[in-house]
Length: 266
Image (cartoon, rainbow, N blue to C red; front, side, top):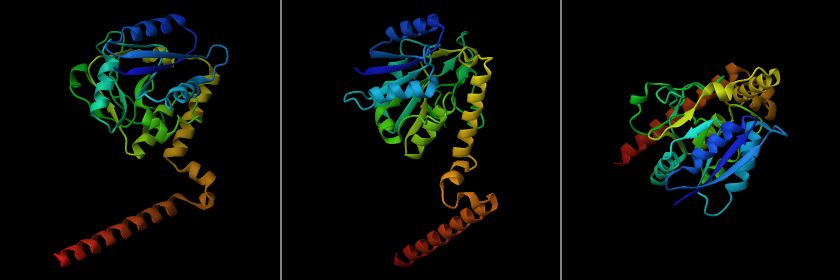
């Protein structure tokens, strides 16, 4: 039986945390080790809190998986067993998430990822459409089971995205290293998007916008490359496209030549 550490960033709303904890204690055939990072005195936000937990557990022998969980995400009793069984049977899966539903437990709030930029898009088909596990582009940080080996290979969450986007960023980084991200239907995670996203705080809104901008510079427009590379500042979009097209043509030419050589030898 697996022992699975649970990493929960906690900020205000102690009643949500307690409800979350009770659902964890009711998990079937899995032992849990609940790590609550209390952000009430020094709010280090989501990503830094998650990284504290990952650093604590992902380099500990005998720990195969860790769960990242929002304090307002409430798991059915079989979620951890279902996810860990799936990952046991699929060693190429680096991250697995359950279906997320609203309080009515009928409306899907996250059933896999659509767009990642500028803000994450959530697949939200009718619940009956989800009948088998499937790959997705990124996992929802409200509830994601991560293989510790994946963290040791891909690294911690990118601290430059302090509140949002770091879950998609970690998923992309893991996928570039050959890991798969899966949605695993079955027992549900009840999670209301309005509870996690509620804020009229201009400071937090600013942080979210900065996170989205950083994510775009990192993955979409090459902005970070231009900042850190010697030739970065002189690169233009047309020049980059020209160089990429040239590499594609060279690859196609060599593939054709190698195919011709193989055919000649046969």
